[in-house]
Amino acid sequence: MAAARGGIKRVLLPARNRKDYEDIPEEVRKGVAFTRLENVDEAIRAALLPKTSPAPAKMRPRAASGT
Image 1 (cartoon, rainbow, N blue to C red):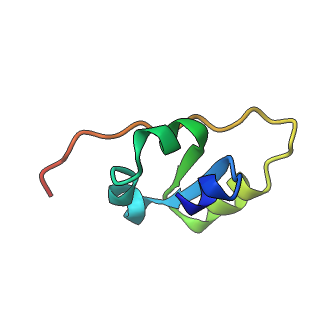
Image 2: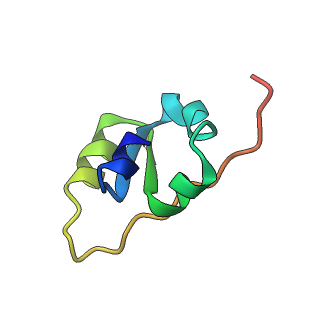
């Protein structure tokens, strides 16, 4: 939510924090593109995308896995 208040439009979200995504209000999720990351290599690639690249797809909530 702080990212949205600060005008940030893209957030890199580590996979282990995906449970926190559900706590973000829907109106905030609509204004910010979230990129879920599984490892450091993905973080580096996502952070270094050229500005001409299309924005990453928004994260969609996953169904609960029961774990």
